[in-house]
Length: 232
Image (cartoon, rainbow, N blue to C red; front, side, top):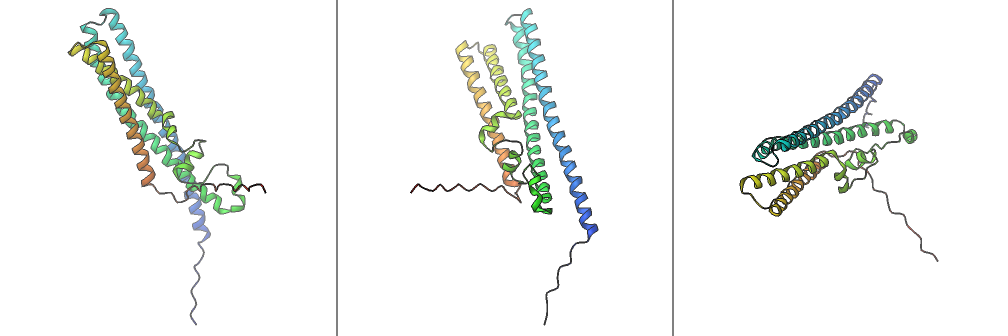
């Protein structure tokens, strides 16, 4: 009578090496999260500093040539350059935000293994071990909602880029065709709104792509609704 051979248990040395690898990976992911956040903050600070310096320079030029040819020439030279800096800053800050979420999900996956070592002691881990997008946000006390996009650093940069694009186009209209003030204001507002919409659409698409391409091994389970008994 044939019997199925039992699968041998992994050796203690292999289990210890695996735990060391997980610990090292956990530490590496935490360091990578800090680097991503610091890079995003540094690039945003650089962009806002360059924009502030540009506005101060335009104010000094306006004192010398109030809304003259020199002012428009300087404004239409430096503002497109600052806008380009804002665009590349937005893309990189968005990439850093996505990296931060990915690293958080990877840490949650490792934390889930920690809770599996002794499930009876899993209550000592305050943060969740769910490695999906909702689980990563839950550990940051953030809900998985579209409104959270409005409070991110990429969204702040997107608003500044939209305002800068609208002002640049309005100044270009005044310089080239001498358009009236209402026309320049409405044109600038329309372009700025369009630029902001493109930024937000690109941001939503990138986060949706990250959700779809990185599958969750331990997804969050939605709580079941409580049954309310009707009074008899």
